[in-house]
Image (cartoon, one colour):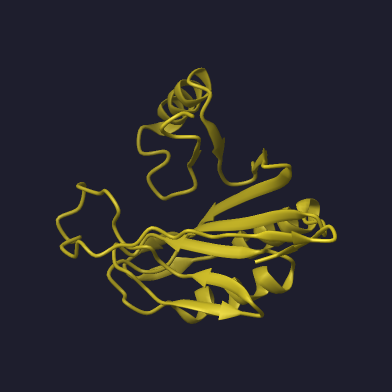
Length: 177
């Protein structure tokens, strides 16, 4: 097993080194057989005989204003394109305002919309702090995991984080979280 199996590149720093830097990152991950997903490009894999789809997207944050134009539509389109009864779809969102300990109304409303559309879980990150987790229609909605490993921002003073482990089971071809 590789130390890193899949990397998500949907975040507001993915293009800090312009398109060339992004392409170099993609090329390096692919050359080491690391799966990847980013805005508009999901990762699809077989895990113990079940198809798992990771869909990632990002809202752009500046001055505590989240610009969300087109994000929900892209994510919903991806869920609809990939969700089946017998697979697992996880939406991974880079969203929310930095250091806000509670998810925004947009996060809450759209996280629930993503589950209503068929996502089996929604996992978020970006605020650099832990936000809440809820069970919505029996599915996990984790708004922000906090800072697992991060050293690039002096504002990120809170070391709290968590690793989320999700388990799914199949019952007659239907995935159950």
